[in-house]
Image 1 (cartoon, rainbow, N blue to C red):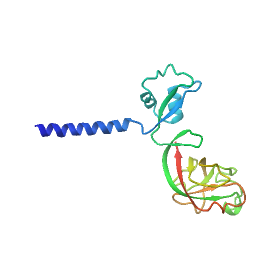
Image 2: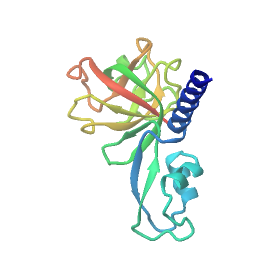
Image 3: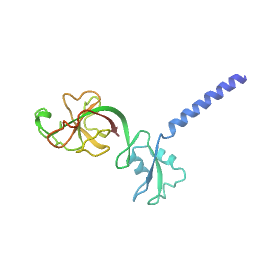
Length: 192
């Protein structure tokens, strides 16, 4: 009887730890209350359940938030952008990046426009739609190039290319020559 009780206790303890891990956020970002903020609006902004925001702030009265008050916002999968803003993401892809310009030779005969006909600009990337759906907003880190934002950038997957397959992205760079970009390893976070 004693062995059975110990085994049952062990199973219950393991189950309790699993449930705690599910309900506990992997990361909580500090957030400062701004004008007109509510827990509901904050939960939508960070794409986390309202209940999670409430649980992360047990001593905070959600009906009496004060301007400048610091709270915790749980974020399971997050990346902190260069602006310091934590953003939720659905998946992270270790990719190989190349770069392209707006020249017709690099764009299948179409000069200066993406797949949808929009003008190319910094933040436009070409992707394999089977890996990163067209229209996705992503955050890219790990590249180095003088005409791109340092340390990382928010980008939009609005272009495709014949050589862009699997975990590969092609980043638009302004100018007439992208050969100095070469091939670089990057991290692409598909944002929620």
